[in-house]
Image (cartoon, rainbow over all chains, first blue to last red; front, top):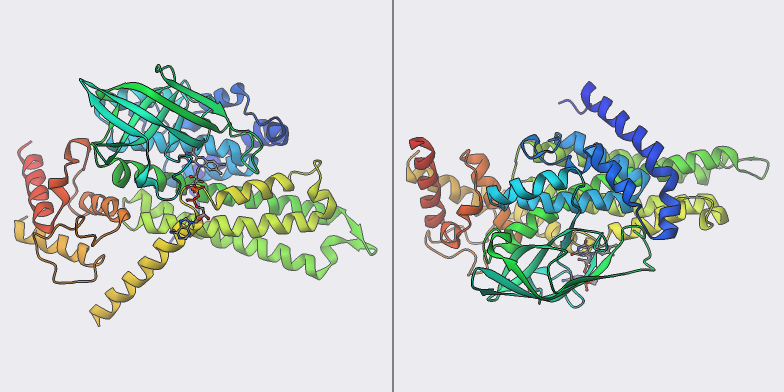
Length: 384
Length: 85
Ligand SMILES: Cc1cc2nc3c(=O)[nH]c(=O)nc-3n(C[C@H](O)[C@H](O)[C@H](O)COP(=O)(O)OP(=O)(O)OC[C@H]3O[C@@H](n4cnc5c(N)ncnc54)[C@H](O)[C@@H]3O)c2cc1C
């Protein structure tokens, strides 16, 4: 068993890390305050091919292996959780197209998404429907050779700037997914501001009023929009978020190591106090444990193992809980400085909280993880 | 691969997910609420890995996945198509 990175992967990680240190980390706090991601930054991610990390080369992407793409999510997550969500959401939409789109849809959309020529958003959640996603109330009605969509979506990351939206709607009572372009008549977005975390992820509420969507923009088939299309996207989202939590946790650890080496109280550096050491030790240990879960999920994804869905859920669940404990401790270690605007740890804590809510809240993960535990238990008993 | 072999492998996979081991081959898995929403994608991944097939857009038909018999026929048919190509 080899859990080490290949020389290629180490090189890629260094490239990602240098990029984050140069272009993302230095502006992340300001973007957070401005509640905005500058367009130039999105374009830069596109130029680097980062938004095409999971898109195969034949569609203009980088076709990275699962570990390398995971390392990219980790590094971006270390710099800015908001920006990570751009990578996540674009990946979710492109994976849904890649898996269930027609050849024409893949050829039409993926090259643009891979290079940030087009930005995608993922529209499932509504004002009245969250966790029970298959029950969305947005409707789609067939009319000639198009569909007419009506409804509202809420909390849509990068909804303020996205060009293309993957929308889950009910078509004759069957969950169905559609691609809607921003310039479709009847389509509009309203910014959501004042969020706890992911403040620069440019969330929006989306109004869909009698939008006529050509039949060619249906992704998958009516009735498969939740079970197959949305679930592919969510599985991908959890994968990116799990790795991103690892990066965010690493940022908390680095900030804490640095601060405790400089700040003195009671005549000694904070690092000399054992209660501080306990928090540092727990950070290091939990980060290592998360990393192993990430590698395991990467391996299963790389090999197309059906177990990847559960393992990715477990990894996202563990990673998001872990990063909340770590970000909380990082603020504790920084004391009042941790609550102020000079240090990034307060942003880390706010962003960490979001990780427990998105891509299926942690309660949703707990339910499916526990269920699969009982399933395995039953299976073992049958074998005996 | 014969249809019986395909069916055995599919049954072994599905049995992991359901309480009742003796589920009839023509029972509707989804309508009877035997499986949860994650199962649909797990089944797709299993078919792809175990039988070295690609399940894509054109295959998204409820009739292909609804029961053990339906899945077996679907895989048999796909297998045949890929052999004759
Ligand atoms: C920053 C941010 C970005 C987001 N980006 C997007 C996006 O791009 N696209 C998109 O579609 N959505 C997005 N969302 C929405 C997100 O997916 C939902 O918030 C999430 O699915 C939970 O839904 P909800 O908020 O409506 O909570 P609800 O479903 O109303 O749940 C409220 C609470 O009850 C718990 N709960 C619900 N049902 C159960 C149950 N059966 N058992 C136990 N507990 C339960 C939940 O875990 C949660 O803690 C975003 C949210 C945030 C905060």
